[in-house]
Image (cartoon, rainbow, N blue to C red; front, top):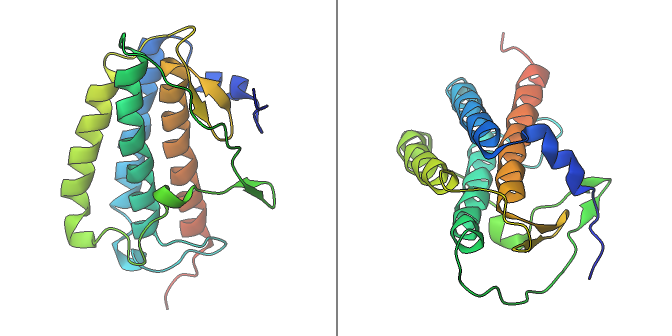
Length: 179
């Protein structure tokens, strides 16, 4: 088994019980949505200290979430778990790098479309999280945290949303005020 690059124990900060983690997910979704509503003026501008615009950050967050919902179903089912490649993620200057399939497009999500796309994404993520529980012995490889069960995947996606919201908040604070 490949050793994880980061301690999966840090995911426990997102909650202990499935109900705690689901409630945290909703709080993180609410907080990101509220922040995104403040970003129309710089929606497509790459942010200070970042490689992406808010439009691209949102697209990336949704791609990650969309890829995890099927894992919730798989890990909480009786279906056979097939071995998967345990390819470690890439760190650059100590920061996790997004895997290629989760990279945003050049333009990200259009401002005119983000609310509808976000609502659909959010609905699917919350619905997928509804049945999540601990699944000891039923895990799936994460490139940075190693083998995670369904509840840890839910913790991870909540933490992922929080991390990107915090990055967006810091970039907004770093933006010079227009004169």
